[in-house]
Amino acid sequence: MQKILTYTGTTEQRSNVSRNRIAIFLCPTNRLAARFPYNEKYIYELKSIRGHKWHPEKKQWSFPFTMDIAEQIIKIFEGEKLTIGPEIRARLDKTQNGDVPQLGQHDANDLTELRRLMRLKNYSHKTIKSYLSCLRTFTKFFERSDPRNLTGEEIRTFLLHLMDVEEFSAASINQMINAIRFYYVEYLKKPLIVGDIPRPRNVKKLPSVLDKTEVKRIFDAVSNLKHKALLMVTYSGGLRVGEVVRLQLEDIDSTRMTIHVHKAKGRKDRYTILGKKTLTVLRAYYKSYHPSRWLFEGQQSGHHITERSAQQVFKDAAARANIHKNVSIHSLRHSFTTHLLESGVDIRYIQELLGHRSMKTTEIYTHVSRRKLSEIQNPIDDL
Image (cartoon, rainbow, N blue to C red):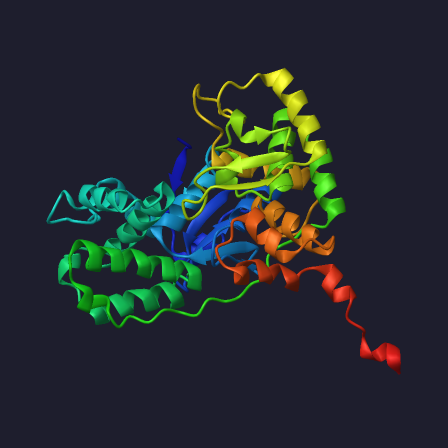
């Protein structure tokens, strides 16, 4: 664990902390602030935190004040000498000492029973983990109140707090509502409490897409053969990160040039395509690494590479390739889809390759396809 120094000055004094140190403190606006010497790696990681803002006049970043975000920031600066403001330190100590109530304070079996119920309903591991995380945030907000006795109005107040103060996205709010509904409807059998809770409208954002030259630059920036194969398979099949890390050797069919994806999102199996260049790199990778079960094995014997590791591989490659767009490893899937559209592949086939349940999900890529835009005649050219 990193060495932590507790800074006990006033808010104004904390804002003047030496710029040669890394400091996390509470702003007068009740937001978390982080100040540190210029570091591209830290900036890149901090930008992944929702609600981040850069304040050029103060040379510092700010974030919504939640303990999850505070712990996330501390994790980013792990290994550095870190100054933490007293308000944040007090909340951290309280959490670490177990003073913050967890779900089911009055029933120690709540978490276990909720997890069992979701497993019986065949929810995915990721959904179970997400719901339990949401419910912990939910119960922490009400301090020592028993969540069984909350009213619908109190729940709406909590959701408004997430929107207005912590600046959660509409998608995150909807996920929180799903978790709360499961708790009250499926577990407590109290559907009336959450029956009239409205859902925020999702903001329709266009996916971040790399052009083909940028994708090639990313591949060329990777010298590690295993990492190059990982990224090329992700792009070649339009795979999600959770799908590519769980591929097994038998899922690669070099005769049919296909990739078999098992139990993807929605518990669906599907086949997608395998590129010839990808197969060439995969064969070289196999000869060098000799994986036994998982296509991309992790450091721990018998386990596949983690999603976090795969994401970091992409981040490092994009940085070395001087890609300045706000992209992630999932952008390879977006780019694969867009490039297929631009080459004239029927959108119905693309829907099957991606495993989309609805055509509407696939159609969003028509908005970022340069081929479609290039077909539009600009009226100024007729003047």
